[in-house]
Image 1 (cartoon, one colour):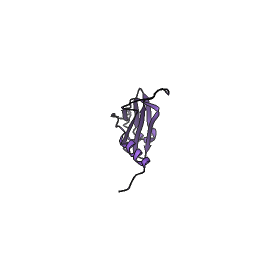
Image 2 (cartoon, one colour):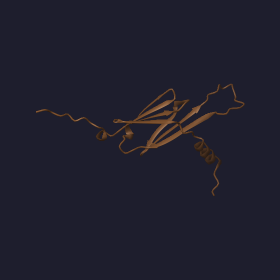
Image 3 (cartoon, rainbow, N blue to C red):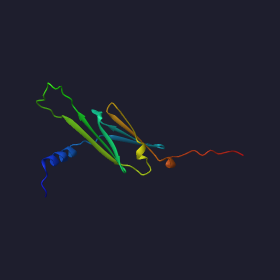
Image 4 (cartoon, rainbow, N blue to C red):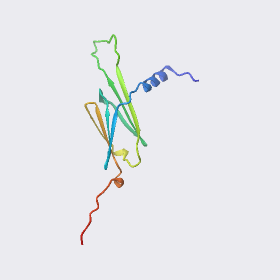
Length: 125
C-alpha cells in the first residue's frame, strides 16, 4: 500500500464527496436532451466537457457569506455535483447546445444528419 500525500487525500475526498445530480434523459428523432438539476450552481461554477465519447458535467454550489461574518457551525459550505455519460457514436458531441436557468441545466445533443429520419418526397406522373 502506498501512502498518499495530504493534497492527494483531499482531492480523493472531494471526488468522493461529489453528489450525483438527478438527470432526466429524453430522445426524439433529432437527438437526445438531458435535463440536470443543479440547485445553487451558477454558470461560473459549472463545467460541461466532452472527451471522445464521454460527457462530463461538474458543478459547485457555494453558500456565499458576507465578509464580516464567520460561521460558527455549518452543515454545508459547498456542494459538488459530478455526473458522466457515455455518448453513442450516432450523436454529434461537437454540436451540443447547453442552457442554464434557475439551477436546471439543459443539454441538447443532436443526432448525426445522416441518421436523422427524413421525409422522401414522392412525385406524381
